[in-house]
Image (cartoon, rainbow, N blue to C red):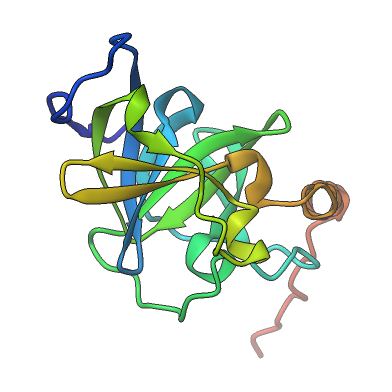
Length: 183
């Protein structure tokens, strides 16, 4: 598992002293966060195997130490333009509805601690599509971090579609190449 650098607490204090630990990552120009307890691991991008009949934001599956994990492209999910993968591209593995799911992000930077009182509800001016993934907005000094809800990244229908696609892929026998005679 790739190590993520830990940074000291954010400036400012909380009256109760309660701190939230989160992993920060970027998608496009924005910084996002996930509760650290929801993150199983962060890995480098690897070869993705296409999964037929999966939702469009699901790029395919990977094999991670024997576990088959569907990979969701957060750029596509958030309605951003596709971008070439770089050396900084990472996959954040979380668990959704009891299934491990990998989320492709442009970079995963660090684990941070932010006072709980530094989080506000999402602004009401946000559109429905954006707002459905966002739980809160945190203030880290002069930066904002948008907290996302991994349980809402994929709808129940999409999770069901992924499960069906995985079952079909596992049950489908491998297609053997016809033997080529060398005359």
